[in-house]
Amino acid sequence: MVREMKEVKKPIVILVPYPAQGHVTPMQNLGWAFAAQGFHPLIVLPRSIHRQLHGESSEEMRWVGLGDGVGQEESPDFFAMESAMEKSMGSELEGLIEKVRGEGDEVACVVVDLLASSAIEPAHRRGIPTAGFWPAMFATYLFIASIPLMLHRRLLSHTGLPQREGKFSLHPELPVISTEDLPWLVGTEAARKARFKFWKRTLERSSALKWLLVNSFPDESKLELANRKLSSEGCPRVLPIGPICRNGIRRSVSFWEEDLSCLKWLEKQKTKSVVYISFGSWVSPIGEAKVRNLAVALEASGRPFIWVLRSSWREGLPNGFLERVEKEERGRVVNWAPQKQILQHNSVACYITHCGWNSILEALQFEKKLVCYPVAGDQFVNCAFVVEVWRVGLKLNGVEAKDVEEGIARVIEDEEMDGRLKTLNQRIMAGNNNTGAFIFKTFLKDLKRASSTTAVTQDATQINIPCYSPNNKNVL
Ligand SMILES: O=c1ccn([C@@H]2O[C@H](COP(=O)(O)OP(=O)(O)O[C@H]3O[C@H](CO)[C@@H](O)[C@H](O)[C@H]3O)[C@@H](O)[C@H]2O)c(=O)[nH]1
Image 1 (tube, rainbow, N blue to C red):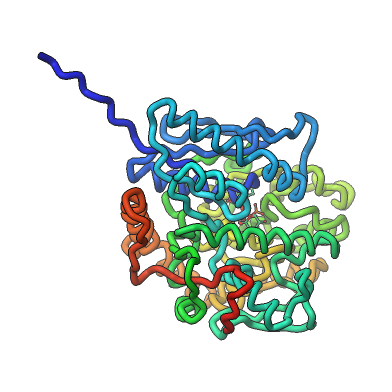
Image 2 (image 1 turned 120 degrees about the vertical axis):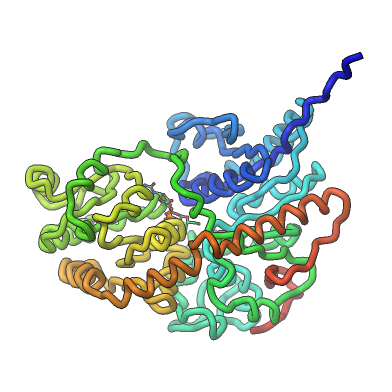
């Protein structure tokens, strides 16, 4: 008699990124890391965002749109999207989990970007092991996680506004930043207060998590000691599994179509001659005057360039700029670029960046020096690491044409910076030093155990962090 073999299906991991490119890209990379370990990643996005994506679901990685109540014509800002997700995520995610189970599949884990924290509770309600994901730098998480401490020390008002002006550091291993550079201080006073409230709620919710996977390298700095001192019961274990961009170049799903024509142009340029400029996907336009200055500086520098400049940012360009650039073959101005391929190219000399964390990791991966112009959120802390801790770039103090021109020249000519960049690249990206991948595998072992027991293994590479609780009065 032939016994019928039961089909063994791969366990499914549901990944919930915040719906912005700088969050979707690292979540996608995390999805590939799960796929390599025998899981089926399924990435969910609000439907209004899902329908805009360029790229496709594949057998290996599926993308699903969940109802969000946002109309075809609307383009919600941060707060509108947050509110849409708060309203719909719970029931939509639970519905998806039930559907997957109804098809006979097992959901092994839900991974929730902390900026999409409304997904934590529904996943727990369905009894699924749930991990948090921090797509950015660990140090920036520490600034968020230290909110209770900053409140306790009266560094902040209860609405999150700094009570003193000036520079400060949370710990000797963290760079000094200005109180104005705290990650929630973006936009108007009302927006700052609303973001602060958002982060407090995020911290409250994340204290229910067992793990927090962080897209940072384990030895980003010696912060571990600081964290041990700050640890408290009931907080997620921080697992620095990054950088997860290092698994080669895969065509990633993106919010805009890449303009590949600039790669052909790049081929014709001299080694280490091109300046690449991009301000990522999520910052508001920097203003017409600054765009104009950047354009003047680029023309005056005489260097070839690729500039990612969406049409909504082009208002400030000097008369005839785009035509001159094209006619003289001086460079390319594109809506959206194949950034990793550009940074990988040996014609590129340096990268003028807003200091989004993914962009920094990609620059470190391909050894490109940085000219930093942070604009909002975590970018000031990221910039401080680039400039003061790793010393692989410099910060522009302004975007007057002279500042930019000098900044580019100084970075390109600084050979010591090249040496430091090489060493840093070896330390965090080299294949034989893949601590992040090792920690990820440790997490998977814990995940297996979590199905049968609630205990989480203690491990030398785990980092304890402070978590939000009104009673947590640990001080630095
Ligand atoms: O023309 C472009 C421009 C960007 N990218 C990619 O888009 C991503 C951009 O990510 P990031 O550099 O992190 O910038 P944002 O999209 O602005 O990211 C948001 O999310 C990050 C992670 O939380 C934060 O560090 C940033 O401050 C925040 O603005 C990177 O992978 C780039 O390779 C392209 O592929 N083509």
